[in-house]
Length: 611
Ligand code: M6R
Image (cartoon, rainbow, N blue to C red; front, top):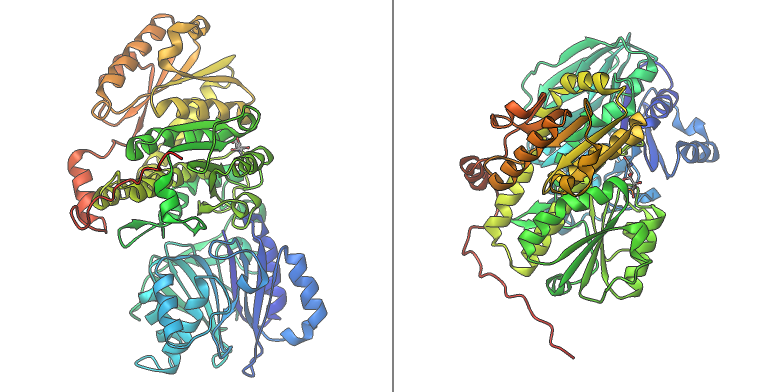
């Protein structure tokens, strides 16, 4: 996730901003940049791909004395739109070079805005969505109702933006002011003596002040040396939440958590929402990059998902939905095995390579092997510009933000969502789903962040369970259907984090051997399916639990809210949100954007003629 810092005060802005960026390096980034206002109408910008050290070396080269001034801003970028190269690094400026913008988030309607700007003769200097904001603000400042009013110009543009954003904006005509705004992306104000800060998190400024103000949704703040003022996007005064930071620097970097992994677990709803955002427009699923034709997608007659570890489990979860939606056979393969077993591939095979890093050697080699066999490759990746997406024919990015904790949490969930989007994209291309059905499935996916948020509110119960089973010799995980790969992932997490022996099984396999492992007191975690959605599997799993309970195992059951059938068999019951029922799904469906059934005929899947 990008790091943002802005400063107006009495110190040299360049030093403050670089210091802030250094303290936000933990967020992960692939380029960095700064802008400084010198007070006499000059706005100086420098930006560089790669580490902060590259930017600092460039500043030394051009001369830091050119960056004198006590107002400025900086940005570390985690690439989303456009590769991590100098020209896509922030700050972005308008054509007159008087407005500079740094941005965190995704502007969903950027394609429309960009087209509008290009039609008006604006030449884009980058591939980013962020640059559009700089041009729009400059135009709003130069003409119309908001002419000459910097704050009103930013507010007017915010009202036009769709998606998630934190924007920090400077204007050369207003060297003592910075305007910042947020929607669904973090922004805090640091309140000092004769100086004020804006930043993506408090780590950027706690060296200077511990007094902070957290902005609410759709709020805008103007900072100067003297103070700060918070309004909504219509210019009306708004309440923001003041607080005093009592974390030390190391805790501040982790958002107040003890470990990065805990922070990332908390970021899961946001990671999911960001992954879905921008991938469904005008009733259609949109990939980020597509270097193959729609016809090639229509011609796909078999899908392989190749990945390692958690990414592999995400493929196993999605297989059920992709097969159901597309009626295509889907095989999920460990990338480390794939190329050694002569898989049957041809130009109608789609290989979906799932990788958070985009650099995992086995997955990369699987991609290369698939391409040698003329198969098409679609990458699901969290790292813009990494090797796997570069070598693929199409790409769908998970926008989970960098995962610093080694154990995958938010990236795993984002991969599941992205794999579902791939399934819907294929169903849409092949015409196995009507547009309104795609819209309804997408609406169900959009309900996931709130559901995950709800699960996170029960974290204390899980923490307590962890303490109680920490001394167990082993832990088993059982599930059926999608609950089976979830059980595999649960076991993987326990192995790599708690160094405990843990195994995941398909519950139906118990009687074929693993039941021998069940002993008195052994914790067995059971992932229950929905009693309504999967009634048959549910009752089968209930009988599996009663069997293992009869053998003395300690049953820890994860079941849907309201599922009371399992209670007698659960030594411990953990609740998950209810699967959307038909009425909720219908409501979601109605709310979903997109075409209605019958808007266009179901396209026919073209069958390739035998040679
Ligand atoms: O970067 P990748 O998604 O390709 O990494 C694959 C696996 O190494 C990874 O998913 C690993 O299993 C998890 N970090 C474990 O939590």
